[in-house]
Structure formats: structure tokens, C-alpha cells
Image (cartoon, rainbow over all chains, first blue to last red; front, side, top):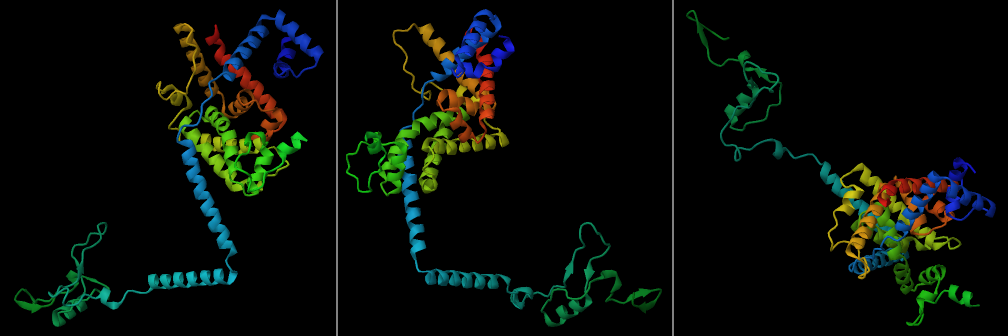
Length: 187
Length: 211
């Protein structure tokens, strides 16, 4: 027998699952070939050690933990069985009621905010403030934006409003007459 | 006749004094499905240590192995009614354990915080599994034995995952090739080839330590 054949049949040889003739041939080869003999001996000794590894046992709390989980399983199974036994009309009504509640809740979430949220009253902001907004960081302008309509409303009614129309640059509006070369005019 | 008696399931209202160990797995399953919860306790007692050792040798973490054994029993409890009673119960329960161990290794490889070797290397004497050593043996022999056991555990852990599982099932659990094929969902040829490779790799790893 060649080493290659020996190795091909080795797994079966180890499990004593080869026929008597092959077994004898393999034993003869192992007795003659130092390399195959060394491998055979290493495998057998290694397996013997592996099979004799000490057995580990479950810890003391294992049983208590498992019992607790099994009790929970039992309760869950019982509840599920009870739910299955309930008349279908009750279940359908339950589902409908839950759907109605959910729809009501969703409708409440989507309702538009009332006007009072958007318009500050004089009680909240008693001092008239002209509405202005600083320019975004990336778009630096030379002057803040001002809406003349808002300013007018704010100064006459003492009810400041958030800007509704398009803002215009401050430089485009002027409230004070400028005197240029002795003549009054509006810039 | 005796065999028939052993396989016969007990009614739900079985008397308290029953020799549960005399019942085979199939009878225990039928008894449990018939409503006798005590039969499940017998299944747990019968398999807890075997499954713990199998999972522990596969994943290398004792505490996690206990958690997974608990999970195996919970799944068995939940799905026992689905078990095909024409099949072998031990193969079914080992299949569940094997899948859980595989998932654990997969999750660990995605999040490789812990390596197999580091888990066993860090054991203190209190955490080590009980070992009954021969008090007559010389201290250096005892030391050598312990050292060899550690090496064996280390080298089993070094085998590739799919080789290790087959190796543990065959060499440590004594399962047949057919059972291993069913548990690992591989064909017989793959099982044989993996086992042969695992044995040879394991021998090559341990050989230098045996000189």
C-alpha cells in the first residue's frame, strides 16, 4: 500500500469502518512507513486527549433561570390560547376600536397650528418690534432686510406681525429726508 | 414487551412516582405533548450537560454557552408540537443547538471583540471546571495533564468553524456520520471530508506538544 492510499482510507481506518483486507494492509503499511506511523500515532493520541476533556456542568443558577423562563412561556402560551378562544366579533370590534383611536390620534397630530401660535399678541410682546431677520451666514448682505409694510403695522397698531411679504434690503427704503447739497430729497 | 412499555407515553395525570429515566426520548415528547409538564423537566435533565459541552466546545465561552442552552430549551418548549416524531429527538435538539452556536460565531465574527483563546486563557482556578485529579499522582504529572488539557482546548478552538463543529459532534459527542450530516445540514461526503481534515489538522497542531 502507498502512503497516498493509506491517507485516503485513513478516516475509515480510524473508525474501524474498512473491510478486513484493507485493515490488514493499512496496519502493515503503518508498521513499515515511519511518516504514516507518526501521523497515525499523533492523531490517535490527540483524539484520546480530546475525548477525555473534563465535562463541564451547568451552574447552580441554571435550573432556576430556566424554570423562570419556562413559567413566562407557559403564561404567554395560555394568554395566546385565550385570545384565540375569544369570539371573533369581539376581536373585530377590538381591532375597529383600536383603529378609530389610532386615526383620531393621527388626525390630532396633523391638525394645523392655530393662528394664535403664529401671531404674537401684545401681551406676549408689548413693545413694538420691527421685524427683521439677519441674512443667512453664507449670503452676507450689506444691510439687514426690512419689510416696510410690517414696520408700518408695527408702529401704528403696536401688534408686530411676522413678515408676510417679500423682504427688501434696508438701503432701498428711507424714512428720513436726506439733505444733499442743500436740497431735500428721498434716497 | 419491555421495549413497548418504555416507549409508551404517560398520561397527563401520571402518578408522581414514575421512573422517568426509563422512558425514551420519543415517549417523553409524547407525554409532554399530552400535557404532562414533568416530562419536559426530564428532557432538560437528560440534555443540559451534553448540550452545554457541545456548545461550549464550539464557541469557547462558558457563560454564553449556558445562555444558548437555555435558548435551546425555550425553543424546544415552544416548538415541540412541530417536531416530526418519526425522526430522532436528539438530532433535532442538536440541530437547534448547532444553529444557535453557528449564529453566535457569525455574530462574533461581525463584532470580533472576543477571541476563542482569550476566553479560556483567562480562567482563574475558581472558574475552571471541576477536575478530579488523582491525589496519588506526582505534582509534575498533574501539571502536565492540566497543561495538555489546556492545549487540547486551545487547538480545538483553533480549528476552522465548520471543521470544529463536525469534530466536536463526532469525537466529543460520539454522533454518527448520518446524524452529523443532519445536524449540520451537509451531505455525508462533506461530513467525512471535514472530519478527516479536522482530525489531521488537530493532530498536526498537537503533535509537537506530545513529543
